[in-house]
Figure 1 (tube, each protein chain N blue to C red):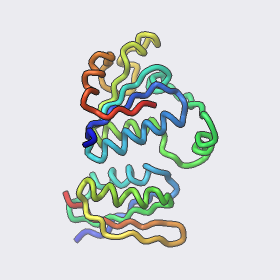
Figure 2: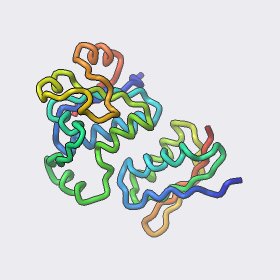
Figure 3: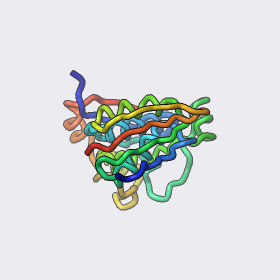
Figure 4: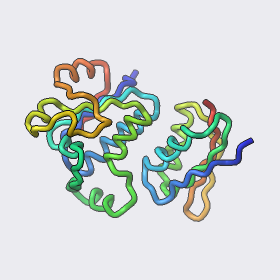
Length: 130
Length: 76
């Protein structure tokens, strides 16, 4: 039996990967599955309040998506938290390296979390990495 | 009985129409009928799956001139 809890680990800053991660998190969360998201490395800067920079695309799909009415990944992550009760955790290491405090991050993010706690929580979950 | 609630997801891609439906379901009453309009074929396939999974009543899907009409009833 597959685990009904979904862990989404996002480390990439590319549009395609952020988009796919946001889709898995949002659709999983609104389908009644417990979802936790861990944002680290190049993914985290997009969740600093006021950061309007566009994620660079990796290839053709990302380029095409930018020209179509695809829901923005940040909107989907926010909806996953607000409509589906997903828990989105910023990585404490990435926050330290970036030099950002909790207040600087989007309000729908949970408190900073370290790998130890995340790995513990992910023990009984399916893990998706982007 | 309340009249049908139209959720216009035309032009949006997966999972946009589903998210718009979920927002509409939040403010709808149990028993209300909703109709999602979508130009995204993936959403037309996905929304009935989602309805079955979470337990709302899926009524029908029709397609006309590139627009899918997915009709459902809020059950809870």
